[in-house]
Amino acid sequence: MSTPGKRPGPAQDRWYAADAGRLLGALLVPASWLVAGWPAAAAMLLVCGGQWLLRWYLLGRPADAVGQLVLLAAGWFSAVGLYHQVSWLDAVMHALASLVVALLVAELLGPMLLRAELLVPRGLRAVVLVGATVTLGVVWELGEWLGHTYITPEIGVGYEDTIGDLAANFIGAVLGAAVRSRHTRQGDAYRSSGNGRRRYSAMASGHGSRR
Image (cartoon, rainbow, N blue to C red; front, top):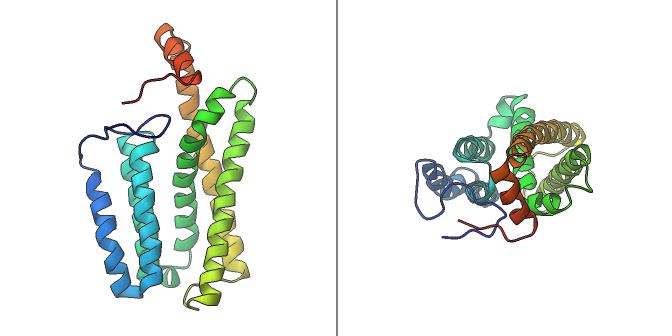
């Protein structure tokens, strides 16, 4: 089975252990509806979609499994109201989820940055990644405000909550950019070898093979 991305994640033609997390995510969609109503189910559905993006685009099976755990926890904690009970948990989960999103964004933007690598310094690539991730965080906060205003007041919003969430998103985005930068340096070392140079040239020209 081929994948649409620059570089697929783990093998796409079979199931493996971490796919149990995706099954759990699908089951938690109706569970969230029963516990907290359809807005919570909609949020968990987004989590489930993120889980599949992790399978297709992230760095490998360990990152896939950890990323799924973070997304599932973030969605379920919201459904059961745990953020209202543990004051610091919201910021921590925002930072961790933002880190996962940053890695996904890096993979989605990867082909463009790969072709422009000679024109875009690594430091600027990190700034682009952080900016894109934080922008998605702003969109999420806007969605929360719209949900609070037009759907249910149970969705928590407020000046301190929003600023705290955005600050946590920024921290997670920076951490994600650092992880991605480390991975890129390892890739640069690989491309400096003979086999790596040939494969990199094929990918940059758009003729790389897909599994």
